[in-house]
Amino acid sequence: MDVLALLADGFAASISPLNLMIVLIGVTVGIFIGAMPGLGSVNGVAIVLPLTFIVPPGSAIILLAAIYYGAMYGGAISSILLGIPGASTAVATTFDGRPMAQKGEAGLALIVAAVASFIGGTISVLLFTVFAVPLADMALAFGPAEEFALVLLAFTTFVGLGGDDILKTIVMICLGLVLSTVGLDIISGEPRLIFGDLPGFYSGISFLVLAIGVYGVGEVLYTIETSRNAPMVTPARLTFSELRAGLSKMRGMWRTMSLGSVMGFFVGILPAAGATPAALMSYGVAKSISKRPESFGRGNPEGVAAPETANNAASTGSLLPMLTLGIPGSPTTALLLGGMVMWGLTPGPMLFVEQKEFVWGLISSLYTANVAAVLVNIALIPVFVWALRMPLTVLCAMVLVLCIVGGYAPGQRLHDVWMIAGFGVAGYLLRKADYPLAPLVLALVLGPLMEKSFRQTMIAEHGDVTVFVERPIAAVFVAISALLFALPLIRALRRGRNGSTRPAPAE
Image 1 (spheres, one colour):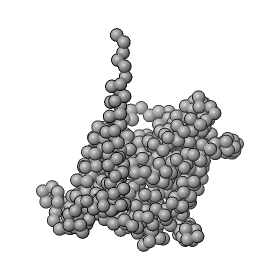
Image 2 (tube, helix red, strand yellow):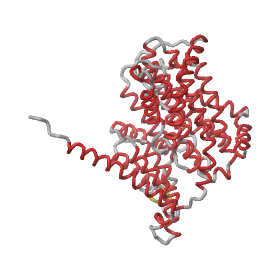
Image 3 (tube, one colour):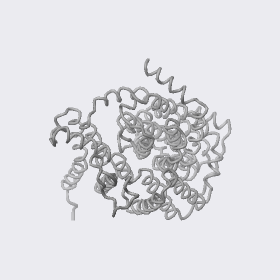
Image 4 (tube, helix red, strand yellow):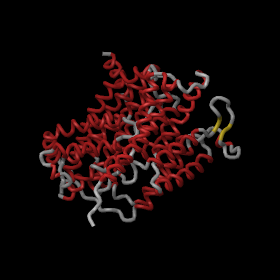
């Protein structure tokens, strides 16, 4: 009953005229960003983040969450009409969405994607409401040692479960941790790594500057290089008869969408997992349980519904560890975490105690954002189809202007603009070399927390590092971290053993 009362109070805040307008603007902008190849929820949140200083923190997080939601919806539009996913989260949608469009069923595919996204979002928000308070209550038992072990777990999750090159992931985590130490020492106040006593580095490296640089400018540079020829947009029209036909066809997909929603939510909770593996897993499960698995990849509507329910459910699931534990479940939630820190809020279990209005206003806004996203998506699909025809040069110029203005406005320092340019070039080069950017951002956000909790523990325990294995909760996290860190080595040894036991080919 307490949860229902808190949720009702949250709805009272989220349905205020200001927040409703913010939700509508956020999902509309998010759908547009998600539909643009080369952009995505990470880039959209990074670009819009500076604008959040003009509204209260409660409305700011609602705006960013609405953009996040809208981008997950919008990714299916370019996947279906262009055959190019707006983001990696919509890769699986192209498998059957593009064949449907080529068969003249683009309208049906877009309807299936929108409704499946709504169902996945709705189920995941309900699960979020149920699990948020118990997880936050459990986290109240955390001290500095447990906080350090939890952050360590977040980093090793990227190493053990990430699909990227393990060595490159570790390098990016270490680089982010080094960048997080730039500025003044948190205990002694002595300057560290200020690059020749440059005044701009005394306040450290801004998370906002790094995010806009690597995800905004860097992505634009990479898109300009890789997008030589724009693909043709498949025309799509939506009529009420098509809408009715699409809704009636989806009645037989309830099992696929239910499994995708639940699977996506719990995969999204895992740090470094996120919506992309959730969508691919859901697609694979849907194909394996289908009565017509041979039709997948040839325009089966279930092949659109499965990944769309999962990636939207995962986007909601990734918010849960961010709010309750202060650990982001995806690159986008790492940006949201950085935004909350900038607004003076501390994500974690105490947020549910000290900032109830903020937390439950956000949770209730996920319900309204989900409804708004499906309505806006279906109503404005013709507009987004037209927007996909925008010349790449115009789109990239708009994004660059937003990046420069957005990076300069908060601190009004030219130093930040130069840093954005530098991080943009670095992000482009790292992307070219296939270095993952998410661990870099995560390390910059969590680095100060990791250092603070470690040094607090060492001061309290007089330098005794065995405290991390003597305290039960910390010991569990450290043990899981060790297992995840060793997981790539175990997999490599198993592959080597299987390869060595194969019989030699006959001569």
